[in-house]
Image 1 (cartoon, one colour):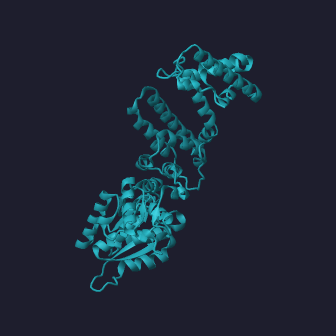
Image 2: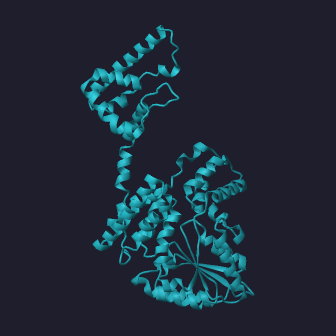
Image 3: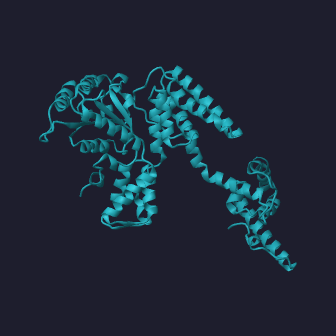
Length: 452
């Protein structure tokens, strides 16, 4: 079966999904080639995986009416191989009768870097300047390549494709394949793809294998591409670069909250920066960003946000004397792990604080303090009462409508918590009977005794 990413690959530039501005620049560069040889003979397309870099290059060849030759640059690293393969392709004519032009597409050019592959990069640099045919270089991270090499090319960035565009493409494929589905299903697939159109199309094909109807329950098997994938990419781009613009761009494109990015940087800085001076300078700038973020939270001074972002992105990136080229296994922030482990406890504390706080519109009108005050001032008192005077604790539990788990929050003694809970239920039941005997109307919400 033909993969849908190939079956529905755009044949013309106008059919390319997303990045309209970049596509116009590419089209204009192609028109320059039809008039002669432009100043920049090579195009350097860069961006994250799945945004259509190869598709744009192939569509350009179709648009110009040229043949296309695809090579993987990272597999042809040496000077001799680059000279033999790329050099020959850039000088020879086309297979198409009456037309000598072709588009040479080199993928993964950022795989040719470092001292070991310098010869290959030197050869490629030569042919980028001398090619008689349009040359399209493709990279995920072009800033790994030397600046003098990048300056020889026309650099065009392709950004992540927005969810609406991905959704539109998925709908069109479903229509052509005769697949009936709920739009909510396609929205979930588009969201999970995180701007990776290729991944979204692959997911759709996998989920519809052998069926013509796709239901909401059918996507349970879909692997969630969660924000961790984005944050790892953001970390690499900030910590591995020595470019101010590159670091700032990483934050803009991440889609993550600044607080989240800062915590990831804080956790992984010591793993990346080996030099103590680099590390000290980076943490100093991260601490300044934290000061800005604190003022933003306390005073709602959002005009300070650009300064915070500058500090924890460009500031941290430029704190090092040189780039570290080692591989680093970035770690999930310890603080997030702590949050995950204490999630249930924190939710329980919030529930109790809400019951202490009360609300004017309900029968549970209590003391009307904030949740923060309830936790700081009332929790210590309740803990003391529950452990030292269980009878009084039962009265309070009845009044607040605390369930067994909420009572256990204040005492580590499970038998004591059970006894207080049972007594609280008895007190609540007795109070309701008394009110009913007095002819007082009892609201339905008042029958909610402490939970089982």
